[in-house]
Amino acid sequence: MHKTLERRLVLSAAAAGLLFASVGGVFAASPLKLEFVTHAAFFSAETKQPKVLDPQVFVEDSAAAEATGPQGIKHVAGVRPPFIDQDPKTSKLFNAEHKPLGFNLQSWLAATGTVSITEKDGKVTLEATFKNLQPNASYSLFENHFDTNPISFTPMDGAGKTNSFTAKADGTASVTVTLPSMPTHDNAVLVIYNSGGQSHGLERGRIGLDAQHQIIARPE
Image (cartoon, rainbow, N blue to C red; front, side, top):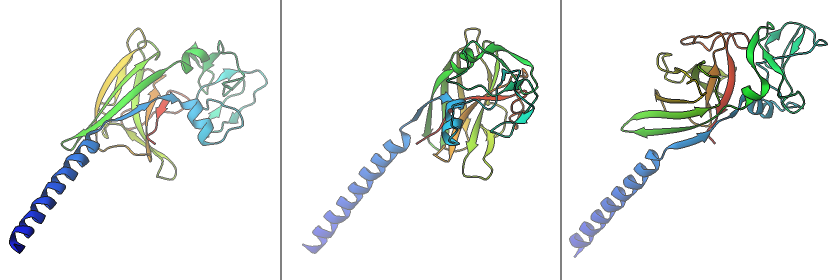
């Protein structure tokens, strides 16, 4: 009697363990799905700016003095970071040295995208789709590390070899990248516009000069 009961308990425990493992596996395999937002909106909210602005692109303003912007980017006189809800969307954009980027504020803010990240058999895969990027432009995916001080950045693939891509002529792009680990709330998927025309390997580039953060997606 006791042996039969013990056997039933063992079988029940084993079944429960299998069920738990199965359920756990399902949750582990469920993709992490995120939508990108503009870096301007994200940065302004995170740093509690009084007005929403983009710290990495610039608009012309004859009254603007040479200064260091809210993200530590030095810019020449005659340009300043745009105020998203104040400056005309037709305002032409420039880098921190007053070099034209070739498009306006509306075009810059129009970029959108979604990303899905899955983990299967120890392999983490990112799949992202974008629209309204700059046509035929160079982009790179980087990972933010908010758990470091200061915040640090690494190529999304960990090596800087497969994290860059070129947008199509219509501004769309689809990207698949193998990641070193599953991102958490301590991280974010960052899309960098390589305004200088080329990627920078393990580095993001000279932010505000030849590279600008455009859109970002952070897990909850």
